[in-house]
Image 1 (spheres, rainbow, N blue to C red):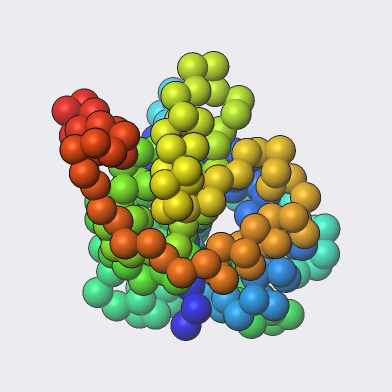
Image 2 (tube, rainbow, N blue to C red):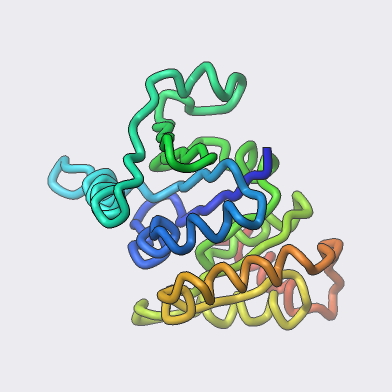
Amino acid sequence: MVTLLVTTGATVTFKELVRNVLQIEFIRGIIDLGFNEVFVQYGNEIKDNVHQSDIFVQQVLKELNSSDQLNFNSYSDSKASIVGFPDTDKLQLFTSSKLDLKLYLFPFSTNVNAYINRANLVISHAGTGSIIDSLKLHKKLIVVINDQLMDNHQAEVAEEFCKQGYCSSLTTKDIKDGASFVKAVRERLAVESKPFTTSKSNVIEAIIYEELAA
């Protein structure tokens, strides 16, 4: 399996990232790049006892199906297909007769590192914890900055990691065009992963310290 993991963090849904991953041009593009398994961790936002993230992702999937008649249908045997993974009760597996692709959707995991470890490429929100987890496991990484946030320190964090050569960064504007999004994936796959190291003089170390102290 060649696996892509998309992770948005454990709480609020990063809607623009989820929506643009679940678009036909992007899906067909990553299949052409050899991916046949996609995991999307889409968030666990609950308001007034209603799981807002679940509602949103099901609507996006419905739109995806209607736009190109892909017919991504739920497959009930998802637990058996990924034995040994954490929180398999939260996994939803979708398959399509038209595409050689397994699409797994889940709101969150108590051990997301198991999914990161499985992935050949991670596309992540710009949360420091998610970035560090991916780099510690030596994964090729694309960070998508949520430029709609009011106090967006995430942009500074992502830019510093990119400056150090650990990942690529995109904004929500960059991923709206499916072809451009796929191009960014292709380019990141072609880059050799840089071993994740820190030093006392490194700004990255300060970022890690801040994350651990939070």
